Image (cartoon, rainbow, N blue to C red; front, side, top):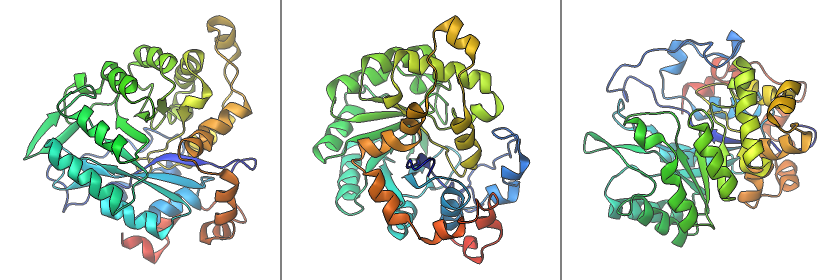
Length: 351
């Protein structure tokens, strides 16, 4: 909670980078790639695991000012033997902390009939709150790219999602993973935005690339949302770049279309949240480019108000339900140290 406003992280996905799940060994990025303070970085050994749900929840709710999170299940990636973030693992996390978590399912097949059948199961049995999709899927041991305007794959899935009552679909864009650049650009977003005006399409990593094209769409379609996972981390390490990205989005679109997302456990959620909370649009950009001042009301929407609205969540009810729970009690005297839930709790050694 920040100034009595609910804070909702729009992306949480504890990766499975364990030896058992890696088909291709992964390197270890510079721990300061996304943060200036090394205490918020995971070590190589900590990162290359099936990251525990308890450590994830602890980082979100005891080590940061986040109140709720949207859990994203992920399909099999080019370098994994199984899902990068297992759907049932995320469902169990949601069930353990139902007042804290929403659940987005996923699609892990290029067979459209199988995909729709899986979606029906996820809605009826797992009670997902939305859908997370990747433009690259490993199917029958080969990577396949797909576009959001594909009439034989994506459009039937979006129609099925609509028929099943799903109103929020997040799609990874901007950062290529497992397929060519063409599948991560944004022009293909236009058709489903037009066909399904009642569905909110959340473009994940919005602004990280293809900013101009995305902003044109943002202005034209009120059902398009900018999920700022990774992008908001630039506020901590490249604040001028972040200011330009945010300035363009608010110039063309509205604050009602932007959502904070940390991407935990890729990075710790508190530094980007704190950077966004403290952010001020530089005066020279407001004067030279016509960017808007970023007000507290705008930040209130971005850090949680928008996700609450699209999911019909009453913020005051959320805050009342979590008051006095294990995480609120734990941080009563202040936020706990970064990754302390991983490093100090015996429970964190299990998923």
